[in-house]
Length: 546
Image 1 (cartoon, helix red, strand yellow):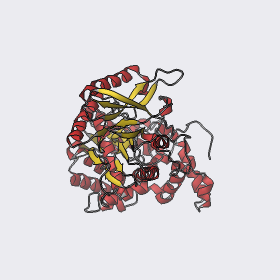
Image 2 (cartoon, rainbow, N blue to C red):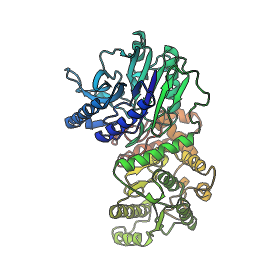
Image 3 (cartoon, one colour):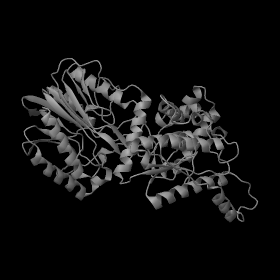
Image 4 (cartoon, rainbow, N blue to C red):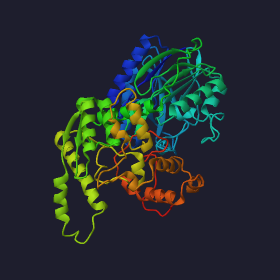
């Protein structure tokens, strides 16, 4: 069977735009010989719609969109994800559903069986699971139509399973000759390889060809990587969708053995960079902005964010601003200017030394007898935030924050200062990963000044300051964060592996104490299995110090 896979980018709530893009891609696939066309999960409304699902007018617009789409679909069936109402009570009011449209009519509807509630997912909040599932018959093929999570419960692949049901196995036992899965599976580092390995295992074990179409694009924190795939009954890859870009694939499931050249991109920094670029491009565009502004300190974090933003939007849409204080080094100022010139972005210098002095004079009376401390350092950072927000208000660019995950974890950042902005581009990237990304950016030529990469990191808020005045070495800190934040490991495990107990306890205390800062931070692009933000729900007021 010749399948068309529409690996497309939808915008949440942009029903008319999503429908128009879907029809354009559908007709493209049909013209190229597709006999069945697949579009992603909840494509008509965009994923994840979250509490928009509580609004009846949002649901009705989605159903109206489906009604408008249906007459435009011809003899070649189209499968597309949408939100349906559930009239059965007791039960939740909605279904995560798929419609099969052919010859201007909906000929079949399917409902998602497994509703994830872990990490960033909260589908059980809104949807009722399918009670019964059945095969879809098209042109003599018995098709197991599944929706995203329905295929993520293979007993042979997962040593520990979340669900008792395995919808794929049920449908194969009922006689399925083809498995199709429409998906909105968000990306994190390594997810594309895990997903492909799992799907290959399912196809091989069930001895049935399998096709999965996955969303691509970014919606708020989540980034969808595409990597749609068609497998034969031996689990061999017949076709693999591109990463982080739209694509229409037309693939014959009975094609001969595939080319060994079909493979995932193996360079982790390339995938991470492309994910962040897509995240910035879609966040800026889908929020209705045209350009961005950021502070360029001459440090590695702001340099990398500038490179990502330039790749995402174009040099003419990125504005770098140097905001030197009395402690800013000539080397850092030179590095910032050099980077801006290399990227071809607008660059301005707005010194903050005089405004900071004026603020200090205003506070002089109430600060009498107090020695300078982090308060004065934070005044500098907040002055920078004030000026960047003023530029945003006056000229319209969206402010990008430049803090990394290591800093955000332990509170090495200033509320209303360097945390000011609308999007935290690298908030889920550890400092050691920042260095690896920067070196990857410079793999062919010097883009980020090598001095920026090689000098000791510093906030430059007091004389001769370095990050390691306040923090453990980043390789040690990031090791703790991977264990404690990402893996939820107990502190004793880290101590048992040779990290001093006092270092572990100090970092953990900083993590817990800084939760109130993270609650007020700009949304960050999720690229790890456990990011700060929508997938990590930790109370602020608490006494646990595990």
